[in-house]
Amino acid sequence: MRRYTMLPLLFVLFWTTPLYSQTISLKTDFQDTASKVIKDASGKYVGICIDLMNLIEKNSGFKFIYPKDFSPLKRIEADLGSGDIDVYFALIKNPAREKFASFIEPLYTIDYILIAKADEKADIKTIDDLKTIGKNGKILTVGGSTIVNYIEKTLGLPADSSAATVNQNLSKLLAGRERFMIYQDLSILYEMTKPEYKDKFKIYPLSLQKEELWLVTSKKQPDSTGKSLQAVIKKLKASGDWDKIVSKYTSITK
Image (cartoon, rainbow, N blue to C red; front, side, top):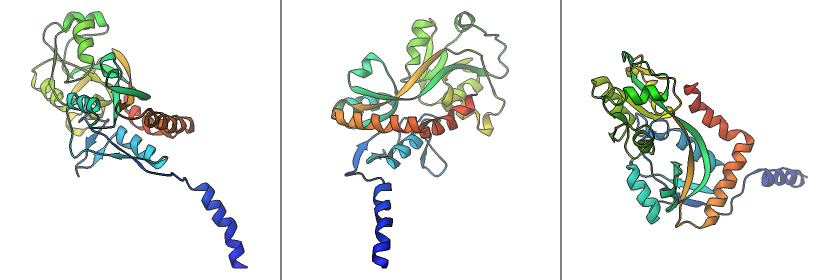
C-alpha cells in the first residue's frame, strides 16, 4: 500500500520542480560602479546586477562566471568584441557598441543628475543655468561613461573623466578641485547613503538624460543565447520578480 501512495507525491514533485537539460556557463566582467556592482567589506560582489544575475540563475539553466576583480570599461568592451567574455550587465546602447555586442533586453533605467558640495552657492534651475555657470571649471564624471559626450557636445562644457569611480569624484568635490559632478543617479545616491557623506552634497533638480541599461552578449555568442536570456528576463518581468529587485535600488532616488 505504501508503494502506491508515494506515486502521486513523486508525480507532483516531478512536474513542479524546474528542470533544465543543461547548465550554460557564461563569462562576465564587472566595472566598479556603485549600486551596479561593488565589493562589500568581506570582498563579496554585491549590487543590483548581482541580484539580477542571481534571479536569472535561479529561474533558468544559466550560470554566470564572475571575474576575480574589476576591469575598466574600455577593457570590458574589448573583451566583448573578442569574445573573451560572453555577457555583460548593464550597458548603455550606442552605435559604436552595437558593432561588437548584441543588445538583448533593457534591465533598468537610470537618470543623470548634477551634484555639488552642500555649501555651493550657484543657483542652477535650468540647463541654460548649468551651461553658463559650468564654464568656470570642468564637470566631473566617470571615465568611459557615455555622458562625457553629452557634457562636451550637448552642453558645450569641459569634462574631467579621469576618475574611475564615483568615490574618486566625490573626494575631488570635497577637496574643492572642481565644483560640479554629473553621473548616474543610482551610483551617486548609493554612495551618498554612506555615513561619511551625510549632508556633504546637494542635488540640483535637473533631469539631464535618461538612459536604459541593457543586458548584452558578445557577437561571438550564438543568437540562441541572447534569445534564451531574453525569454527568461521577460518572464521574470511579467511575474513582478524583476521589478521587486530593481525597486529596491531605485527607491533611494525617490
